[in-house]
Length: 344
Image 1 (spheres, rainbow, N blue to C red):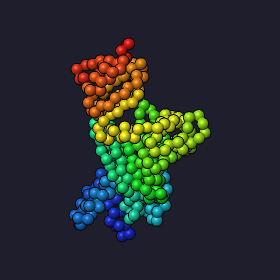
Image 2: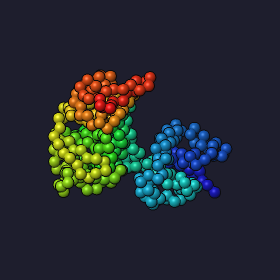
Image 3: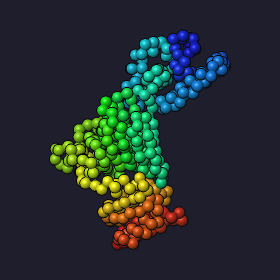
Image 4: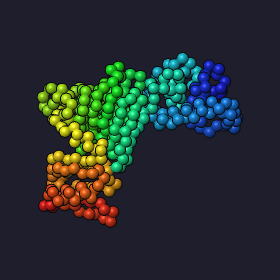
């Protein structure tokens, strides 16, 4: 026979709210259960507040039963004192998530199992996010960054776009950013990462970072190599230099870069210096709902140089067409343009 959460005197308010949340997620309540739930909510305003917190946490976790974090959490949660007895009334499908919610509700463990926070920008939007440790993320347009902090780690993932990271110093908690299949690790420094043309671009502004080959989710492997040598690529990544590596390669290149030019996007400018038109167009498209396209391989390889206001697509088209061997072809009635080589 199932027991009501409020029947167990050793379960605290947060745990009771979490168990009600689990029961509601497991199916419709019987009339008696609904009446009991309504009475529990009406008994004290703190009950409703605790339930709202548990429901918010549940929404974060309920769709992630198969995620790696939950696979690790399964045994830990069920090993907790009284866990098997407390979950006896739950269906197997929800037992693991219930254990996670109970652990979240336990005092002092919110950070350890906190759900990731996702920061994103839309087309032509930029923003700065301040994290709980004082670190800052400056997001370029059309960018997504996922953040998960724990007691001894600061794990982030750049899913798309470009972001600059100003890392608060904390030697006991490494700050790692997964981008593509690479991992950038720092403790207190300033750097940016961009995903562009299936490559990872890392620019170091100050401090030091380690750039590793790795897997999605932050499982880092060996350091990247500089070219075909066995030298670690990040040994050459001093402030004022840029590391570039294909997402599927472990051989990187490192070269000097102009930091003021590289930060111009934060001020709403796009600066291109001898850059392939294909990558310039990808950056321009972050600021325009009317996406530009490359019409042929020759056009994509044209090297362009110029300074443009982010979002001013017309000025970009006019400037590129006038200065370089490409032409803009309008397609349809919605001002969609294809850039093709003049010879095509």
